[in-house]
Length: 174
Image (cartoon, rainbow, N blue to C red; front, side, top):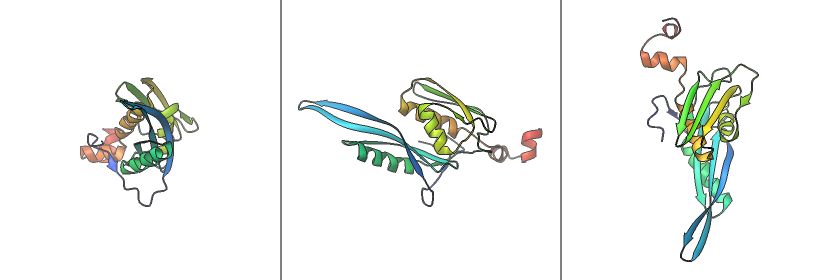
């Protein structure tokens, strides 16, 4: 899932204090010739609130096992996000399907100005001051993936200097 992002650093779940947050549970129906078969789909975000976050999807016939499967899936997709002084390094837009998300760094004391699935992801990452706007689709699955798209494109000054092969001072002064 994260192969198209150059700066995405995958993280192993061992030794991390991960907290899981339920974004949404949907009841899904499959119509067969024997009638309707009901199941549940759950989307979960896990994070250590210090820059590591992952998202997962679980499906099952009952809610509890769908959530458990989603948490296990999320732990397999952990990535490190650059956070500077409780906010983001720069403004970034992300999109997935019909959902578009814009996340903007904010001054200390602003808080997390975000709604729904975007708030859940940003709180799991550990961002304390951020502005965001979600446009287009409000489908929680797509909004979570759009937020991850934006977060995975973030790069801090050290990563930019390393990629360009120049010193940190030249990034700011050149």
